[in-house]
Length: 308
Image (cartoon, rainbow, N blue to C red; front, side, top):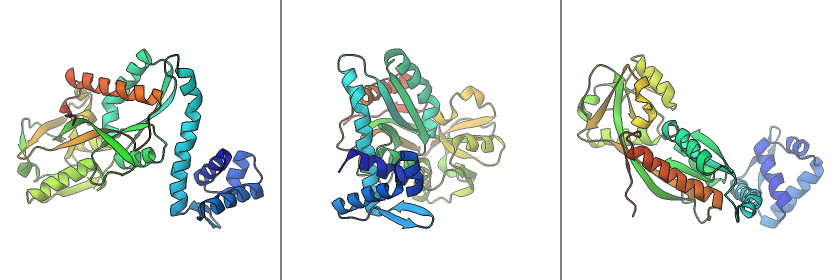
């Protein structure tokens, strides 16, 4: 198996077409097909399904694609690792953050990295935890923050980072705590079923024997805030999703009690893979920045997780 075969295969899957990949790679299509056939023979597995609309990876092909991405990413880091041995770490570090956490953490992390890690360029991806988990497992991210999920991937190693309290947010003058049973009288705008906050809310309602009424399902927190500000429904959010709160003048933010709701956030890397120097240093800075935001009171409703 050759490195060029890995690059060829990844590009074919990315573009979904042998002809497009051949043009992009400046390789004749018959030669490209021959390289893929050689890979399939060596692996004793069919990697691609060909159709009139292009190509798609088989289940085996998808597994190989993820491994190939990870290997190519590690190879691309080798020059930076060598140059960093006697100097400050350098290179591009890909970091994943859930939408709400990036609202408060991304600016602080970039500022800290610019000050103490001038040789590193951060590539920050903001998505839901499900998409970030897939990117991390596939080698497209060096590390990622992920909210605790019902079925975490066995390919990912998780380290507890913090716990965020969840709040009832609505267009109202009401203040103070609100019991879950009272909040259940409202109609909610929440993310889709795969979202961690949605799962926390649903499980709390089920355990309390309450019915959850949905006005709409919206994944993007900024769209949810806009809809709530229009009085179209209430929502449940961590305060990081509302940062800075001085801009939320029309919204009521109330602690939910009996029971309180919270979600855990973990710092995650691929299982069994030792972090290169640059990502390892960024992970340390990320933990330090998180602790500072919490200690200074900027990350309201969050507490650092207890390490086992």
